Length: 295
Image (cartoon, rainbow, N blue to C red):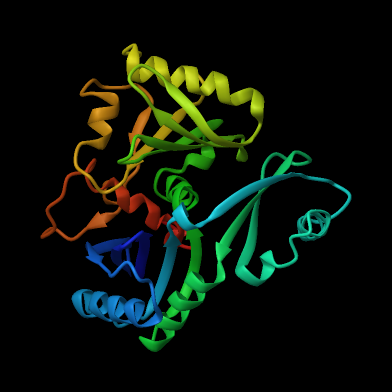
């Protein structure tokens, strides 16, 4: 299996095979592509990766970068399905043309609460899928950014057994993303920006009353040297591909309930691979390719 992670003009990949004792990571790496994300560019990219990893299975998972993806939320209802709610929303806001440009997916927050709508550009998705087919590949799963990493938290670290947990993504531009899950219900998806002594909300989706409390906890950890988060059982943290992002955010001190979210720390890994857990935590976004695997 080959897990592909789109990051603007770079694709990261994680190549693994299923053995008698579970998944084993054979290799990982990155390939830079032209910013013009055309069909031919994607085809060349995938051909290059396949030659590098010598993958014969031709099964791929794909995680899309959310820089080209749009989010919105709707009040959920027990009376009608999520597709009906989205169609109603589109009709009410005269957005019929949006379905021609985007494929729409949704995640449910707590039952009877809200729906998080994810708008994926059809052009990017189609170009990638056609490129996979041209290279003899088959798509196994499709996800986006931090939501793929959340699958990894469940598959690699059994996060679903915890009462509550969060997945925290540290980005290179001082932007952060966080998912908060309570009793296996998605409660909050928030994007926030780091300043000298504080964080500011950029976008939030889900339960509004949680965001200020969670943000104050994070500020206490980052700026006041607190050693433990009180708002959840465990935080699974990872970063974009740039050295030192997690250390720059949290410092060198040890924290009681923070785990580096990285498949290399949970799976069997080829002994010839050399890596640092924190600096390779960007591989967390390969999580969706393990969703049907018993790790």
